[in-house]
Length: 305
Image (cartoon, rainbow, N blue to C red):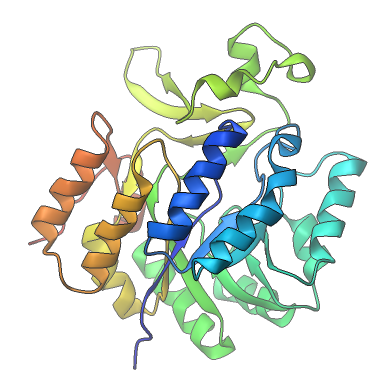
């Protein structure tokens, strides 16, 4: 099997950063980050969307000038008529590939080329084949899959001509809820949240009753408490047939993170210094890759060097 050159995707920003910081972030990504694709759009909470939606055309054009493919991500949880309409409007756009993050968007995009995001439960070849028949050309798999499961899906992807993507860095999206725990933790209701999630640009850490680090809360979203790190697993995933790797934006130097992954994929940076560099870029953070290895997700299994 001939493997195509691996591509890097910068996933959607899950966190509620101020608009000015977002614009600066994407401007630097456009000019400096060695990524092939950037996913834009609010995928977590529709209340946040007005803060940045008006800037998306300008940011998308800047990214395109920088040689990046731009994909627009849909909401991961659609509950209201206006949210459903926004998904329909997004799916009707001819300017960008749309990444569907829930079944509302999957249905809206059916019959035209689109991508499937990691919050859609594509767990088996039959589901992948169904999505492909409906027009999905690219799928970013859920982060809790094992390497064996990814291998089975890769076979179906090859048969259907679907590009397979796996998240390789950043907090994993685990769940999304109609209720906002972030607001509740600050004594507020969801409707009057005062956008407290903006206080935590990397999410709000959540510990167990015993004080052990556990998960991260981001508005209505639950994320892993650790950063996923698949640097040592890239070769294995490439051999399985994965052609794209996703980096999820975190409160760190994402250009340097992208450079590190690109250097490893291109075979110009050995694993040991690459792993050290990634940890230097994310001081104080825990790393994990347990799901891929069939153990608890928060575990980390170092690859042999």
